[in-house]
Length: 619
Image (cartoon, rainbow, N blue to C red; front, side, top):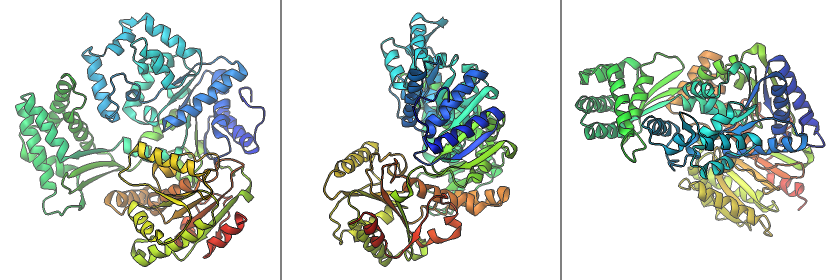
């Protein structure tokens, strides 16, 4: 409590803080389902920082999005202002997002290759501005400013822009003396990045307190980080790089690689997939070229360095090839090898088991707090991430919001199950939706399992009068388009009738947006966003069945229910909000799915949801 910056502690917040403190003292890991309204950010930041300062530890707050970084920095600013406690915090985001070279269109791997080449060739004036054999005077001044008080990464970038310094390098230097570091998942859970990151900071996991925010995202993020893809396109572009730099050996090598990919797809139709054995692809390559497999990896890596040393060259496809071939050669379990025949065919090395990275991290760290508003079932996340059962505390906290402010309904008799999809089913959905929406006084959001189903239901919804403007999320929209859609919905809040947002589950509008100030009076979930039954999903189910004997749950049902709960959580964001949550699918009644609901969600099953909604809003 010594660093808690507010006058009052909420009931659920106090319980959460006590559990965080117990985990810190005992060196345990806390896996916490903490709904919106618990005030979990300050409840974990304050005790973790106090413990770190008293015991010589460092806090790493890991967040998947920049907006969550902002919330943490603002919390630290409040602590600094209220308590006058001296501490150093640093906000570190992916280096490409603050890079003065303006190459944010590259992904993490591509940018890191570009950045490494620029530093190696001494072509980056911003890096050189920080490191001139030793730290420059301008860099030391900037570092002192960063360590003076909690700052957002954007504020650090402004400090560095007037001094021609690399913001990332300044943050790293400041981080060497930091008590609290805010960073991304990949800084800790990507093995290669973690080793370099911690070495630069002079930090060890043994002295680390890890806070993982929105931890329901972590398994998939780790799996994505550890996966690799090779396509016809990337091999073709790598071949052009080899031709441009007159690398005869690699010109032939890449032709052979392309031929091996083509051979994998022989006899397959567009859209078809198949599993590929490790040895099969290696033998196919060896049969097409005189180059040894290892030589192909090494030469590709060497060529990529030449490519990135060229003026205005930010991307190397040879590096993509090198990374893929290096990964493919491994004999690891917990991975699937899949070929998909398309116009641009793809060979994938897909990680199935996030614990291949996370177990090592959690075993080594002093304490980890994993928290999210949708972290159910808790045991699944503990298992998937490889947490030691002897060190784990799993806790589900109840929503602090008044129960009477939320109406929770399940509508049977409709489903998006594949075999039951029909024009008549979509017509039925539209009819029930129209009845619900007419009884909602303000805005409503309806989230579908796919854009295709959204389109079918929307077509039938047009035949019904709802009295509200309809806003439709489209697959072709970029981030700016979706922000504009959100703003239009916010403006309709003050309209007499409000509006309807039609969007998709597992999208930015159903998970990444905070509908504050009771912007939504109702959220309707149409169907279950189950993964498409492709080979990766099949491999995931089979692997989880072998390791945990819960393949169908862990690989298929529970991830879909998490997306449902994320979307449903857009409705009520504060203790004064009032809203209706309606789940429209027969399967929500089934035990396999309903066991994922939080303890404090009491659903009414009804074929007449409009009557309940009308009574709830007193219309």
